[in-house]
Length: 279
Image 1 (tube, rainbow, N blue to C red):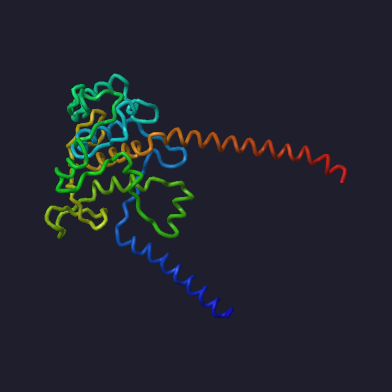
Image 2 (cartoon, rainbow, N blue to C red):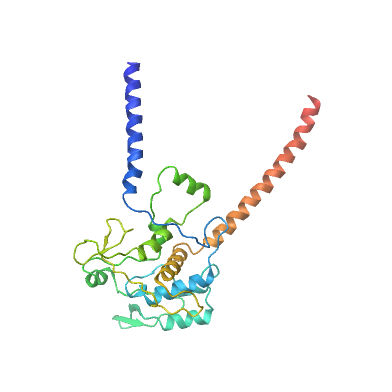
């Protein structure tokens, strides 16, 4: 009876090991994005303000035609930890936004108005049905949380290395790689485009970034690679706008715990010294 139970346990263990090894092998069939160097990586990383402002410009001039960032308000663009545009510039951005705020007017009828700084950034479509109708039944996703929603598997033992290094930028790596991963000369169904990093490699979204498409005023390279890097960083901020605050509080908590541990150690030494002295 014991030998039968032992054999069953060994078989279950081997099956679990086989499934565990099969998952990384399956994931390896899809090419993983290359890693990029991000200013906000690691426990002490911070956003590059200029990069976030450029990324917002790329979103506004290119991505906003199809994709919304509905979880972000205009006023967030001026708050600490983000692009930190001046408040008057944010008000001007809202007033000149290409999409209007849709609401119900005083007469009970649908109405539109220019956005205000307190409004969520309106997207290009009134609702998901309108978005689906404009894109052959498939609505373009909201990009607010895309940097957290997308990721990729590294498999054993690399995921342990990521944990040790506190690397959490898999999603933003994927966004940048996706935007620059279009290739021609591949056989894909009609109406789709080949992308080496997209699951299945066939995606309806066309290659939207071209060199010289967006004019930067700070002298940064005006290349598709730079556009992809900047807008990916911006989408990392939209997904985690309180990241810098979180890291700062985390460091303060760790510092507090270190000081508390030292105080507790010396308190213990002082209290128990009397007991040990009478032993």
